[in-house]
Figure 1: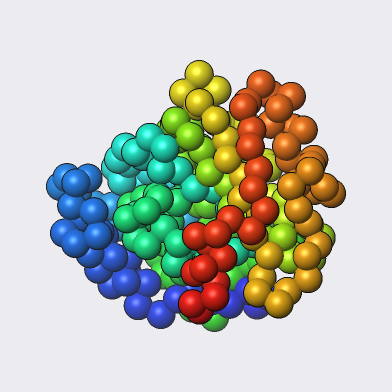
Figure 2 (figure 1 turned 45 degrees about the vertical axis):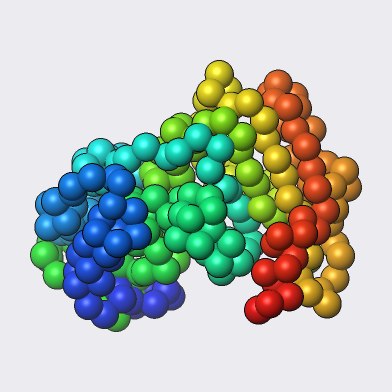
Amino acid sequence: KWKGEGTTQNLERIFIGRCYDYIRIVNPAVGEKNCLELWEAFRNAFINKHPCNILPKDYELFIKLAFHTIPANKSLFWENNQLLVKSFTSGARRYMSLSDALFGFVADFLVWCGQANSTGLDYESCPTMEECENNAVDSFWRMASITYAQHSSGVIHVLLNGSAEGGAYPVKGFFADYEIPNLQKDKISKIVIWVVDDIQGPDRDSCGKNTVKILEDRLKALGYDVTCTDNYKPVLFLLCVD
């Protein structure tokens, strides 16, 4: 038994349903995609393999089949505020975060893993990041994050949680380890950071301080034009509404 929860029940139906939802309703502009083919490519990345032996590159075919353009100036990176980001992007209407792109949308909030020498899914338990880095879910999001970063352009937005324990910008995290290194500098005009505290939450981090300063310094050292705003009003209003 692994320590993580098992594969989400009805994974295949949820995945295929989300795929059709995306290409028909959420974002028909991406054009026609074969949702059954996408599911097969996704499933083949981890099925019949030890659940600690899945590499990001195993998802390459799925990403290739699901890929579509990320509109310029619409990319939104984040740490420690997944639900807020979902609400703020509004299904790619305002911005297109990774989970608003088809290749992230189909897998958002889901859990999955297979078993060695078996074509079945493991519904009992799946390994956590602590148990092994190369698990099916984390390897997927690494590959998806790298692809998303490589194809982001124009003004890049980053939404951070100023109330997060340990700081708004985790120096070890998906944004730090997989997204920043894969940004294509020649395609990016500016990076805009928003640090928003939880309503009535502690103000642990702000622009120019603590981990946000570490992030600003890192991006400036890479040659980016960086601006930072504390408690960006549109996001704050959304938090108030909630």
